[in-house]
Length: 271
Ligand code: SF4
Image 1 (cartoon, rainbow, N blue to C red):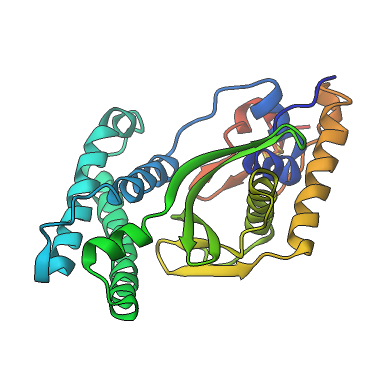
Image 2: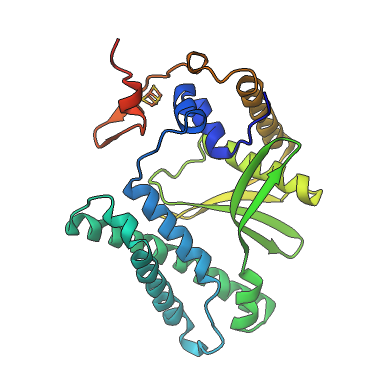
């Protein structure tokens, strides 16, 4: 059987529950969209568009202008995702709650950005426009390795002097570099190495409710990624039979406010 092309998210699904992987990537059952995914997409689009802002006319009031600009981008993208948001069946109060929560996240992010750009202007003695250009990352880049049969979309690649930093944005509440995140960052490091022949210096997550958390890239992180990629290919290229993808029944099957996308198909709590 040919090797499937995996991604950090498919590998993490496989590690969480093989049956869930089977439903999602082999049987390709439709997954149910939820507000957390849609809002995550909106926040990503806002941060991607942010670096296209025309800043030449910002002048002394640049802090205010950046804040206004990011709010406009959020409103624009929220409208753009209107049909998807409508499909979620939220009432007006619920939608407003998530809009305001997302607004707090992007405002938090822009406050960190303002600290960075000010520091850049002061340290390098350069203009706002130059500092903005220097801080503009490569955005939403697809990396694909035929060798490892894996691919991923990297949110932001920042080139700072000699350093390359890879950053992913997350809207979830947790502020910890849990195993699934380390694996995702390890895979990005491996993909970057494959393409550019050198490892990024640091990788990290901008937790939009909190702040940026970075970690050094070392051999151990890359080896972890290689090991997990090898493990999944070892399994999925041998079999696609449902029975070979057992259920892992945990509280992630169903919780107080939601359930696994495939709960109805899986019926994990029935004999
Ligand atoms: S409901 Fe639970 S056991 Fe079933 S696929 Fe989802 S996570 Fe796996």
